[in-house]
Length: 239
Image (tube, rainbow, N blue to C red; front, side, top):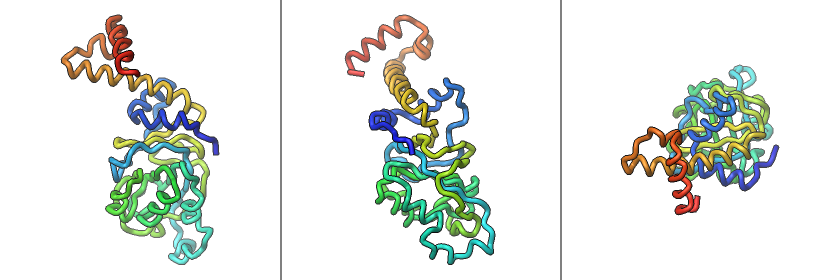
């Protein structure tokens, strides 16, 4: 799995998913925001890490009885134990939250192993327990039935679709209180650097707007005075 530079990881912790969406849109990437997932604990902090994936297909009853969990190599269980510390487990549940992608025990295990977070376009069971964990977790909605009733874990760390987004192993996944975005790994450094710059300008603009300043000529910065004021603001604020 490609290694995310520590300095890039830290930059991505300081910017919003919304800002990253704009930075990617500038590069022609319009469909990187995972649709219809939300954080169970919005206060868990920003999630940043390389994607480690698990893919489900529709369950076939003769191959998916409860006894499959006795196999130590079962893909769901193995993925939980193999997901690297610092990575984000991204689960393709076919946008179907009627059966759980995982539950509180497996999510707790990911947390204790040092994984950066977990995302599914399906649902989690024990969602009320997961919501109390200091661990970024994203899903569509709560779902109590075991995944075996509808989903069959079939592949670990291959390309998947999650919430209408193509996710490749090693892509950079960032989540905040608003949602989750996927950054192609080769763009991570430049996107992170640009997003930090964008965030500084947006913080300046927010302060000005709250003082009563018009957005015309300010956002976007089409007036020279805006650029002068921003440069002065950066100097004062060390940004």
